Length: 162
Length: 162
Image: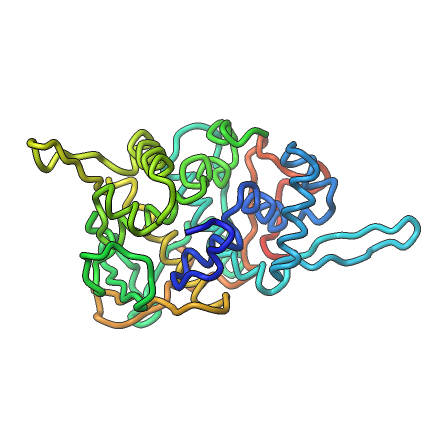
């Protein structure tokens, strides 16, 4: 498997990582969700090499997660906005942020407020069929035939048996 | 910001990426959730350099997501098992897999079955307070003071305004 060919994998997790798995990409997207839109904002937030910031932004535009919009003509200035596809990563951001706050020591944490009800909340992953929370270990995954998998495991496995 | 110092960041997303943000790590964890436990299984699934597989497994053990357990003495053989901390990434795996299946073209997809109700499901992120699904844009995030953020955004921002 080659990192730059993950987009060709059958596994949807591998395909997702082809889009968001490069170093810094998820932190750029985090900043977008937090309202950043200009190159200088991303550069100031991440404090990494400017060519890397530019490369990641260009990839996110190419992949359709961000759109590059002119907001000034003289001198020309652009900003980056989350597209519908980019905004659809909100679930991922919430789960990643919640996991880090809950499970990893150090640093501070972040509070999420649900504007629907006005309360601080944790994201709870529930089942679209029965609407109950999905407990650890309560998932079986059925793979498509081409999915990279250990040869001796069955096609019908249980998540979280570890 | 340096990639190998992300664990010191206040932002919980950055801290999460210090643990799971290296190339291939999430695919190794995917394979663990799918039942893989032996070095050769990971190597066969990922088809990447064996030292990289070994390095990622060692890091996951060090970070407490996997435990290394001897299952045979002569010759010595070990397997890797998800710990409680590792299994707590089930939400992330579900959301990442669902996003890739739904949003990214190509490849096949994966079906998740909720063993609680027996039905194929999509993970739905809901609010722990009101139990309603959290719509795109319906989140405000309150940052801790040290969080990397664009200087001119307020401390109280809206997710998904993009």
